[in-house]
Length: 290
Ligand SMILES: [Zn+2]
Image 1 (cartoon, rainbow, N blue to C red):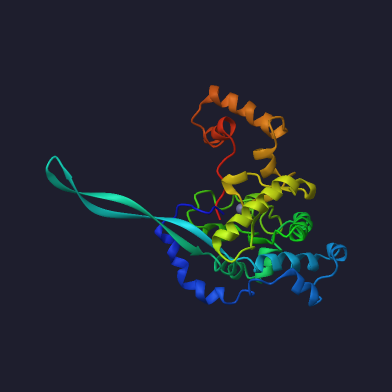
Image 2: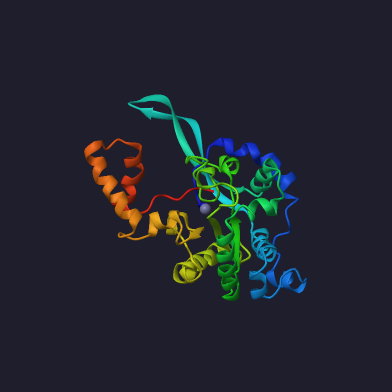
């Protein structure tokens, strides 16, 4: 997810479903302490031994998080201009920023997959990754950061619902089929739900991301794209993180450099070269979009 991203008019085809499906979601603002009091959660250590307890906790963090994004909508309009004393009509593109509620997307994708929303969103993630997330999110909660999950598992179908999505639908580490699909999701989008307004929550989210950069590795998680896709978090021993943030001497980085040098001889125009050129010369790739 990015705060601002480009989107075509096709994004609006789903607006009608927002109201119907969005209403079936669990009430936001479910607090962990409320769950604890209701007995749904065991104490932290006991919980870590129970998959359903971990999943319920992750679900509560997901359910309390607003699924709202700011998107860029380009509009083409015809305008009159004067050129050399003559009035001409030209087309110009104007950009407007709109708030998009993407609450409906996960329920729609779960329905498409024939699953309950919790089985889809949480159960689609790799088990080991869920355990890492459990410990990390508990620590963030304890630090008063009030973490929230805007997106977890996403299959190829869900990926096609992503507004402005240009990348291949099967290529996402959130659970694209190229990386194993259901049960193998290795990415989650994290924000903070602390604050009454979107700008307050944005400021809290910046704090949360700083915390992840400082302490995430203690729990095995990190942000592969840093601020290029700020909420996107994955395991630091995973392929995605290693290839973007693994440092200059990781196996993958050395391999990429070798292939890159070779590509200069074989032909710079290859698809692989185009994909990796920017990464090698200027830094990490732009993040995938929600
Ligand atoms: Zn992501």
